[in-house]
Image 1 (tube, rainbow, N blue to C red):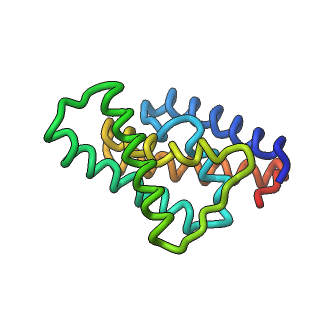
Image 2 (cartoon, rainbow, N blue to C red; image 1 turned 120 degrees about the vertical axis):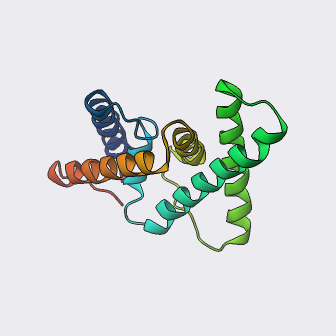
Length: 151
């Protein structure tokens, strides 16, 4: 996969996410999340682990950390990101599933579960996962139509 292919998928995802949000009012877990997950279509286990980590992150922050400290706004967002990063490191050391690092997007992949968890906290699990899943499918379909290679 070339850098231009990655950039094209991410830009396409941002445009589709903006259009979707304007039309429906539902946030698809951040503008780059559907694009990043589209790049992982060849490794569904990585997508599944990302979704699992995001749900675990939400549960830990909402039912654990927020019960012992005051979390709101940016503090809650940072808590979601930090918990997601810690969970990823723990899971990567315990579970032998190898994540695929996309060249140039390794850091983005680290924050994706936190972005998903933060959006779940704002609008609910069903709306977040359904909208993100729909945009992954549409972005992937566009990559096929535009003949963009996803490795």
